[in-house]
Length: 288
Ligand SMILES: [Zn+2]
Image (cartoon, rainbow, N blue to C red):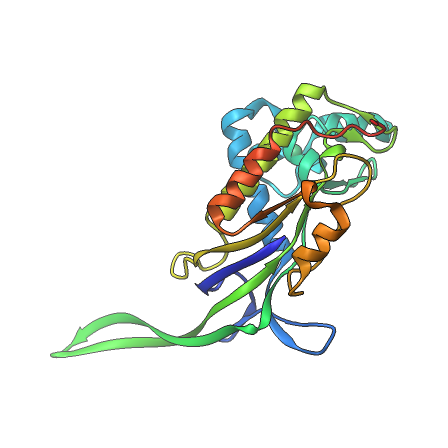
């Protein structure tokens, strides 16, 4: 969890009405309105980063749908849908890295898997964001008629936003490859470690350059990232305290103890913190 400064972006929007694109607005519990980037978008950015890495490094560990990053995932995997019982269908589905890590829904047999990576909305600190609507024109040059150039002009409005965003994400490595019907691991420890490393690499890839909407002309400027990486070495969960709170780092340190908390004050130190997590093995359910 942390605070990221993103300038002049338009990463996701409410939708377009006529020629006006509305930025995402979120109302917090105290009634304050702020700018937001949805968890769906952030999860999608992570999934795409993971997919690119898996295509390069573990291409045989993707189901036919995930080979082409189809949102159908396991639901389009005939080996899964041909199974008669849900437990073996789930075991088959877990052979795919993206299905295992990012979750899926299968209609027949009815089967769902919750993602092992979770993202909250990124909220701008209510007193630290700005929005501008820029007016653009698209000009189509028409036929020239007797010395006069006929042009068609279309006016459209594009939002540009800047802010310090509170970011939260949880990764649950203990669930990698875990069949949650029989509560047994469907893949080997080595395969679980490979996937664990890939998920961490995908976090790095997404944080080094945020993908999203309108990046062809609103490629975000960013560089400031402060926060904490909190780890748990046992069955006890890590706390998630919103970086909207000024003292979130002190609270996390008070709960977990300094040893389990890595603080970072730049993108570079955040990336080093993620790399350091690769020295650990993913937790196994029931391990002491
Ligand atoms: Zn898949």
